[in-house]
Image 1 (cartoon, helix red, strand yellow):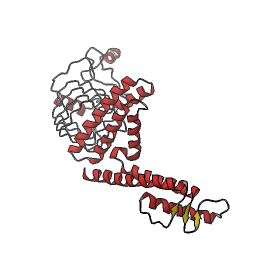
Image 2 (image 1 turned 135 degrees about the vertical axis):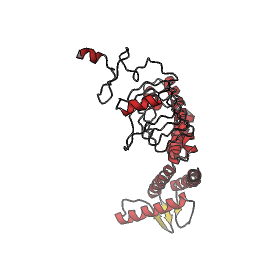
Image 3 (image 1 turned 60 degrees about the vertical axis):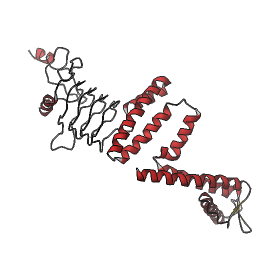
Image 4 (image 1 turned 90 degrees about the vertical axis):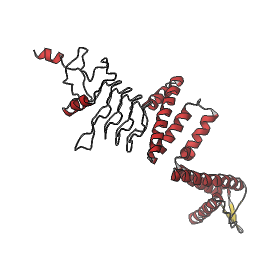
Length: 329
C-alpha cells in the first residue's frame, strides 16, 4: 500500500531535497511540475495562489503560456519571497502581478509578459530574460547578478573556441541588457541603467573578431572610461599617468634654475626624495597644462612632457563629459 502511494506522488525534488506531494498525473509529475501538460491560456492565477498558500513546492513549476495575470505571490509578513527557481514561464502572462522579492533564479522567462507588474526586489540571477516584456514594470532593487544567463554560456563557449555559437549568445545578452536599460531609464533607476548600458556595450564588443582593431579599440575605451559609465576609471588612469611620468622625469632629469633634478646614487636619500617630489610636482603641472616654467624638462623628459600634456588635456575634457553625462541622465 505504501509503495503504491509513493508511486502516485509527483517525482519532482527541489534543490533542498523536498519531494512534491501532489498527485502524479501519469507522467511521473503533478499538474504543476509536468512539462508535457499544455497550460496554454489556462487562467491559473487563483489556483496557483491556493497551491502556494498551502505550502506547495514552487521550484521547477512548468507554466508555459499560462495566464497568471493579476496573481499575488507576495509572502506576507516576510522579507523573503517565494522561490520559483528553475521554473518555466515561457510566454506566460504575468501582467499586473504582485511578485515582491520573488526568486526566479535559473528560471525560463523568455518573452514572459510582466507589463504593469511589481518585481520590486526580485532575484533574477541566471534567469533567461530574452524578450521579457517590462512595460511599466516596477524593477527597483532587482538582482540580475554579474552575468546574465546567455553571457555565462557565451563565455564558456568562447573559451572552448565555439566562436559562432558564442557570438549568437552575446547578441542575445546584448538584447537583454538593452531591454533592462530601457526599463530602468523609464523609471529613473540610474544605477541599473548605467550597469546595463556598460554591459550592453561590452556584449557588442565581444561579438567582434578577436584581436581585431575595433575590438582592441573598444577594450581600451572600456579600460579608460568604462564606455562613459565609469568616470572613476579616468581618475585612476590620470593618477597612474602622473605617477609614471614623475618617475620618468626623476630618471631622465629636469632643471630648476641651475640645478639638475634627477636620481643619482651619489645623492643622499633625502636629496633623491626631494628630487622625486619636485618631479611629481612638475608631472602634475604638465598633466594639467598649467606650465609654471619654474622647472624645465631636458632630454627624453621633453618627450614625456609632450605626451603627458596631450593625454592630460584629453583626459580632463573626457572626465568632464562623462561626469556631466551621468549627472544629467
